[in-house]
Image 1 (cartoon, rainbow, N blue to C red):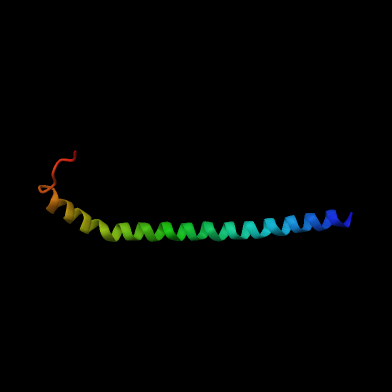
Image 2 (cartoon, rainbow, N blue to C red):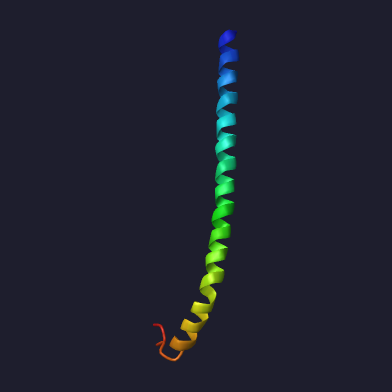
Length: 62
């Protein structure tokens, strides 16, 4: 009977560890999304300028 209690306790501890790591991953994903959005905002003016300058140079694809 004590083996069942030990198995349940180990399973619960494992789930706690997985939940903690899952929360850390979600927070890291949120931070990465913010960084990507910030970088996109910073690069947008250069992208517009580049597309204006290269718009007449582009060859048709195919």
